[in-house]
Image 1: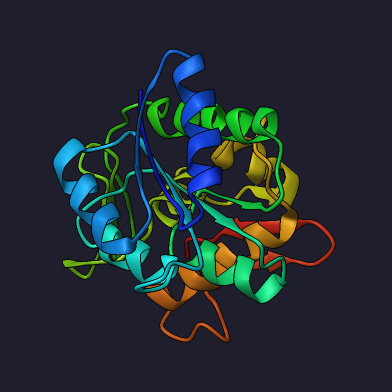
Image 2: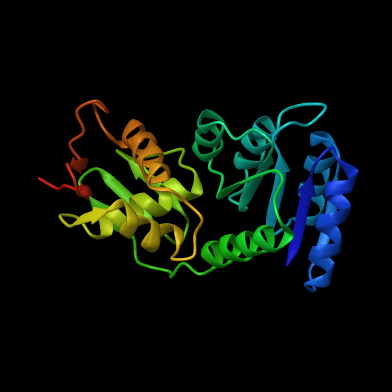
Length: 224
């Protein structure tokens, strides 16, 4: 496994590098977004650890650029613990969010969890529901023939809900089935991803027809 860590604190990078190498994996480090982007294109990492506050541009901006061409798993590292910052990271398609200071044991557990989830999805046949065509093999979703700009986790959530249309799932169940049983995510994460999915697939996101909320339970995908 190749890990790319981008942080403007050399001490943190060195600590992460020692841990990753100790676990038998390769590690590449950068202190700026520009260098991180160069290494991303060069080494094609299996996972990226991105500090939100970088000297030349924000980690969020870097993630946006990465997401234009790649679904590589991303974990944000930050000293900012506000819910708004966490939501912004999730909306960009981040797979996890670690607040500084963190223990190396916790960070490594999250890295393993995210990589395992991203590589363990089964290959399925395309799911066609109404105007939606969802193809797991290409990781693309079309609505009326137009490709939707979904983050990797948004796609996984849409695929799961559409594949189980009519069934009601609690937020905890969705976390287990989409993020993984060992995922470090809160029910709020599910709500964020549902909200953004609705913007992509609903005619009126404020009055959703496809992904409906079942009060006190969770969500279901509805086909007329």
